[in-house]
Length: 241
Figure: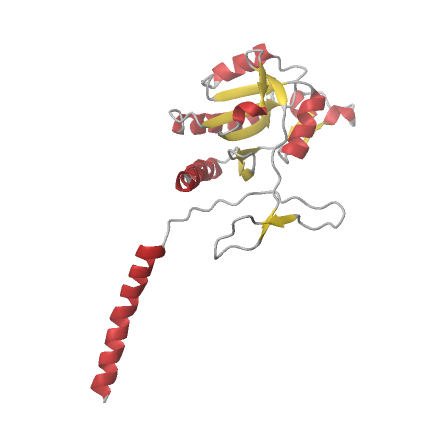
């Protein structure tokens, strides 16, 4: 009897992996995951907004979370030409907020963005956008000089300016990045680095305008993660074709 029991256990042990392999071969798929960020909150209930999933798979819920998308905007680039969010439709891009007179975190962020640019130099669907939080000073000429300092490629990395009324709400409500002009409430501030308060975060935005990640633009390891997750996002789009 023990021989039969041992034989049964052995057959089961050998058969289960075979069945798992056949199942995965027949039904398995390679799934790449990179979640969307910033769910939309219903102002009347304080709860996350949900909507009906039009074509749910067997393992997906009937309701989908509604996520924030970047609102439309129109600014001026380093060449003095109009540049709008429509030009980023169908593109994956990384955004940051900086200013050319910054001597603290901005040079570190721009250095790391140069790395990102180099990795995706031959991939036109990946773009970089740098928004100035000091638009009164940062004219297209100033932006162009700054771009040259970091070997920015004109068709890859765009530097944008406009009015404070355009850029500050866009940073806070569009990209969920804190921005402030300290001189508005503290007249003692004198240097640009004391005046313009902004985040060191880089923001990854997908082709539909959803935020897919926030990264510390002064931290090489976190920017390595950004580079990896851009590649993951590209794989997601490839599998959806």
